[in-house]
Length: 114
Image (tube, rainbow, N blue to C red; front, side):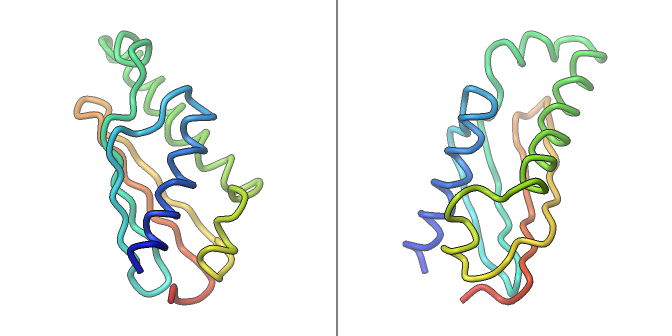
């Protein structure tokens, strides 16, 4: 299972790097039933950290990091993700704590991950 988790993490990291110009420094995933729960540390770019110094900037970074990623996965999951898991992605829940630079994503699939 660890090979599958590593491959899953690499897919997630690659997409975030392509979207934001920087992937997470650390990523950890666990598979539970039909969900992949992913914790991502060290996500923010230096520019995002600078912007997040104000309350308005923090909200802007939060919105960009959560809404954009949800829209991208909603349009089309990253190449190889569903094939790796052996199930169709039906929902993605994602949030980031800007102050601590930690994000969590919960991927919900249409059947259990094996």
